[in-house]
Amino acid sequence: MAENVCIKAYSNIGVGVTGNAGPTKSPNSDVGEVWVSIYILGEMHSYHFKYASLQREEIINKTTDAIYSLLDKLLG
Image (cartoon, rainbow, N blue to C red; front, top):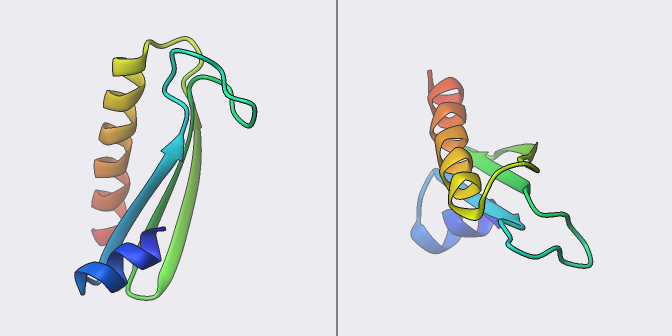
């Protein structure tokens, strides 16, 4: 997903996010499970987060914050 973002956007950096922010459990993931991939200059970085005790909006906000933090570390 992240690599395809780079291809489609003619970019050196792409971010892909999938998971379940709720409110209901899905067959393949629990509420609060999030997977993030960051593709930078041909290198893939993948992360898995679990925010089981949070509400939907909090899961989305925590994931967004985590992505910005990861990008800061990877680009720093």
